[in-house]
Amino acid sequence: MSTSHFLTLFDLSAGELNQLIDHAIDIKTRLKEGKAHTPLQGKTLAMLFEKSSTRTRVSFEVGMSQLGGSSLFLSPNDTQIGRGEPVEDTAKVISSMVDGIMIRTNEHAKIQTFADNSSVPVINGLTDDYHPCQLLADMLTFKELRGSIKGATVSWIGDGNNMCHSFMNAAEIFGFTLKISCPENFMPKAELLAQRANNIVICPTPQDASESSDLVVTDTWASMGQEDEKDAREKAFAGYCVDDAMMKLANKDALFMHCLPAYRNSEVTPSVIDGPQSVVWQEAENRLHAQKALLEKFLA
Image (cartoon, rainbow, N blue to C red; front, side):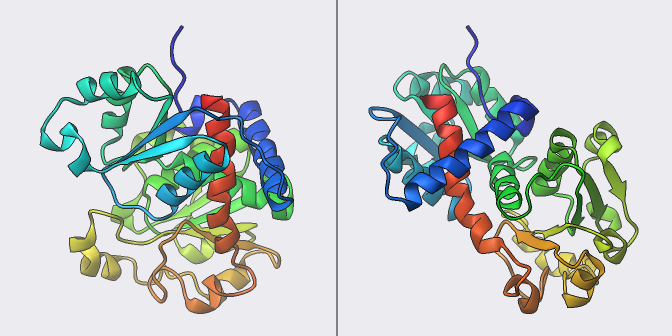
């Protein structure tokens, strides 16, 4: 019997993802009411980080604790991968000792290789191509505030990065339209655009993307590992800062999301991210609840 993994949203069906989000709402309610929910007693999650993290580490570590299990943090300095051990060998050894593995790394091919050689579920905590756990939190947040996202219009403004790729996947799975506006040299991968074409509209300007939207989303212009490109990127992204004028083009009750960390007056103005349409703090907290549902599904 093959081991199931969560490397992209497509590793679960639309029905499974919707059930997972509903379960996350139930888990969140129980926590707020002080009701214990500990289905992962005796289970251990290994967490491998090759990229720094705030929300991913805290949410997975706290999530395992609240579910009754334990977690083990491993940085590149803590494993032999950092000294050149083949990914395949590390995967076989670690998976023989734990019940699940969460990895936050660079190349998506690396996490795929790890999963191919792991005897326990592997969860993608972020790669250069995808960030599916963040999308679980985003879909959970929208459902809490607006109900089903099916048929909605979502605007992606900024870099065609791993978050944009994951929103492209989500558009097909959850049945919403994704309007994308990126600078010419920062578009999402062409092969992914071709695969998800039915649910995507490419817009020439961020204003076009924002118009009549139910949700406006952006991300930092320089992700981890791109810090040396910061000045060049700021020039390329001039005009892509989500501001009040852009939000006014969206629907009156449109929400604003950002996976954080955010850089005010770069990709978003303070008046937007700290304003009444912003749900970034609820979105960030929901990483915990969505991932607890995910951990329970794969490790219970």
